[in-house]
Image (cartoon, rainbow, N blue to C red):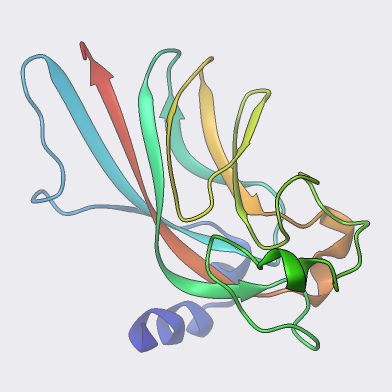
Length: 163
């Protein structure tokens, strides 16, 4: 993890941008009836919706899984957490006017394709109900990102074909 954070901190553009890194061939498989593609992405706590560059088509199955890193919605007052966000007791102490999804805790990883918005947390497998680019962010509204800090890395897997 130390190498990951040092590398990301070295580039100021890495903080604001989402990096899309293809996973090694050992992690990606292809068969005649089904195709699996995997990508790694870095999601910053200081930016709103971040384009992963991963396109899903209606009916595709895909998953988003937390790999490493940490972030916070208030660097001065609250510890960093992983993609599952804060526990509900800590969440209750954070100002409640900045959530994207009110029924999820602050710091939870969120995913969006088209109009479909869902909490991912540490792992979630989904079926695309429409086509579009997968975007990710922290559960904290745009106007409240100024006191955030950190970034996480996730792996995105997309299955295409017959299931």
